[in-house]
Image (cartoon, rainbow, N blue to C red):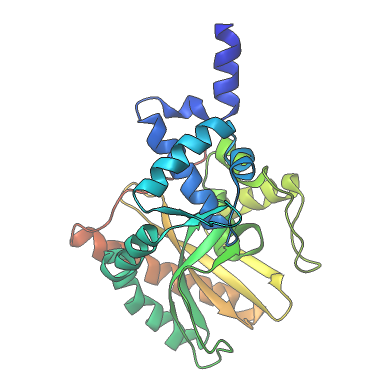
Length: 277
């Protein structure tokens, strides 16, 4: 019986909870799930997504509702992120040194390349853009921070996924079928793992019209104090493949300078990513 419990805990990811407050980690998984899905989710749907029992999810969600981080639709009984979470996220975008200082470096990349420069992070199977600087060749008129994009089809998403431990990649990408957006979108997990190996070897990621037919992206990591990806710096637009090497070099130089500046001011945190060997 004990062996069965251990096996069940390991398969659900609970084996990684040692040394941490398990309820907090479970609540964080629920918050990530609601962040990934812009539409409200019911208890059963949430339970399936975070791989917990409906009873456990119901108790955790009730607590999250009580502190204002989650809200329930009174007609459908489904849940979404609450105003408390919205307020915290909005303050973080203004005060977080990585985002605040990152805007200056994004502006340099956008001016040099003529294309949009973006700072993004990973939330489950989605990338979330934190800051953006428009280049002269931009076709995007407005930018709204926080809009999630499918990580498997974006350069920044593939970059950040590539450095996750294998069990986390399996948890993130194994929940739902990878959606195809263009004929170049990678939807096969084995092929995606080979892509991750290449990304780790070369230190950057490219999406070749995998999300949109009209544009592509190149992403490099902004490293934390442990040398792990804290965020991604990505250039987006109608990028000329002949200039990829030069663009990668420029992005890597700017990202290193950004990390060095944050280190000097004591504002460079340690990310939650563990390096993949």
